[in-house]
Length: 78
Image (cartoon, rainbow, N blue to C red):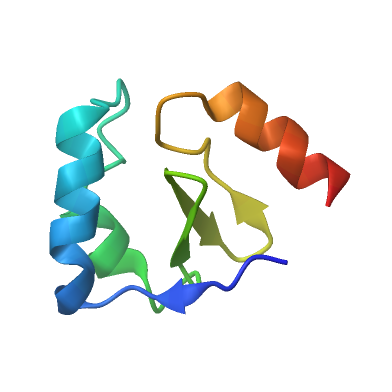
């Protein structure tokens, strides 16, 4: 089971590290964006097998890390 945490200013370095190492195509993936929307759509995050997992309401973004497809498969099996 994933242990989701609230997004707050103390998490900025985690987001920045992942987004620098694994640049994203969509502009929605910035710490500022996730922080700004954290309360309106209940955005949360967790670290899972060297991937950053971000959720909003009942959905998840594509995991950020070296092998997101494998992580999706593992999460489906959970």
